Image 1 (spheres, one colour):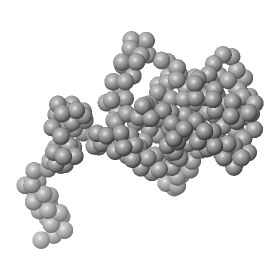
Image 2 (cartoon, helix red, strand yellow; image 1 turned 90 degrees about the horizontal axis):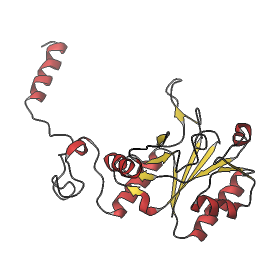
Image 3 (cartoon, rainbow, N blue to C red; image 1 turned 90 degrees about the vertical axis):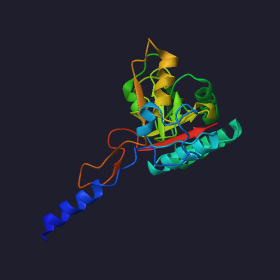
Image 4 (spheres, rainbow, N blue to C red; image 1 turned 180 degrees about the vertical axis):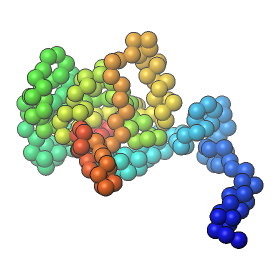
Length: 230
């Protein structure tokens, strides 16, 4: 038998075994049937599984964020949030902060006591580019992909998450969502029909692997992403 015939024979043999539908290879404990709350109905049957408890989703988000080279920290209080931010300020020598008005961003900037460039109104692009860090809020965190969902209404416009070299996202634990269908449902419920002009899923720091498949961070945006969840 030639190598070609051997390969074709193996393909024929493999085709005799029926493959499970994607997302259906798990048992009913980890993947309940459709209609049981977050099951395999609709598009979810094609997507990776997510947990059903907050702790399961939190650990999934933590794992995915780490794989994407994003730093994720769950903080227990505003005091701990302040400590994390001050540690980053000292470690990286922050001089100026790009930010926007918000409950958590206002608190953070008050603790850091650094000059700020706010993007809520008019701002100078060159000044924003000179900021050491951008501190924004977000719409949601998506456990399934380790992504941060931001819009122009939640994160101070389009530029904050792109120009400064370090993007710090401040989130609340109630914003943790399971999967992408849940994230899109959230967007529809929150904004339809007047959607924001800018909607983005930030999945790790900016990266490229175009040259000899070598991963380079910060090629087209922030080279560092830190997520602090209260």
